[in-house]
Length: 117
Image 1 (cartoon, rainbow, N blue to C red):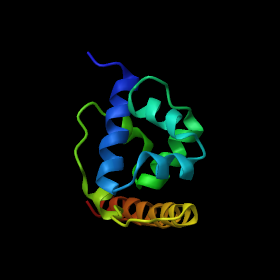
Image 2: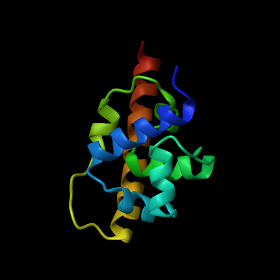
Image 3: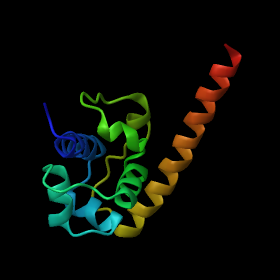
C-alpha cells in the first residue's frame, strides 16, 4: 500500500506534466524552492495545507484530487490545462486566477445539474 505522500507526489507530477509546467515554474508560483517541490513530487516531504491550496489553484483542480490513489486526467484538469512555454512568474499567477474562475464555473454547473435532477 502506498503512503499518502507517495500518492500526492505521483499526482502532483502527473498533473504538472499534463499542464506543461516545469518543477521550477510550479515552485516559483507557489512560493517554495524547486528542491522542496521536488520532494513533494517524490513523496519525500508532506505538502503543507497552504501549499496544497496554492498548487491546486495553479493546476485548476480540487485539492482532494491529489489524494486519490488512481487519478485520471478528468475534464476539469484538462479544461484548465495550459501548454505554453516561457511563462513568467506573473503569468502563472494570472493563470491560477483564471483556473479558479473556471473551477468555480464548473462547480456551479454541477450544482445546477444536481438541482435539475
